[in-house]
Image 1 (cartoon, helix red, strand yellow):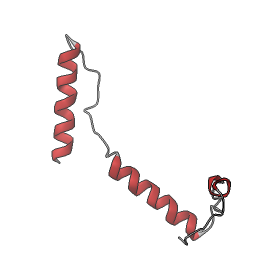
Image 2 (cartoon, rainbow, N blue to C red):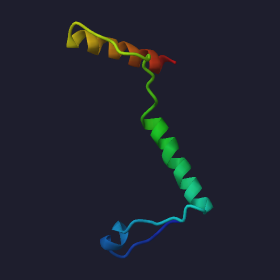
Image 3 (cartoon, helix red, strand yellow):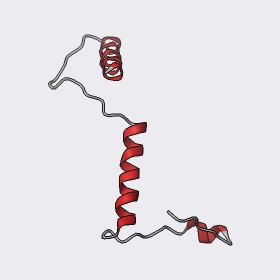
Length: 72
């Protein structure tokens, strides 16, 4: 993407509009999804409904699932 210069802060706050049919739009969209995957990796939890006796037991199970996801 080209570097854009602004004379005022008001100019800089205007949103950038990209036409969805352009290559720039595709490149920007790809970058957004790549960043999202980097900063918020998909967490996979087993399917189903789980019952726990306490909130602490529930939090411990959630922590175990997250650790297992991060190790893979």
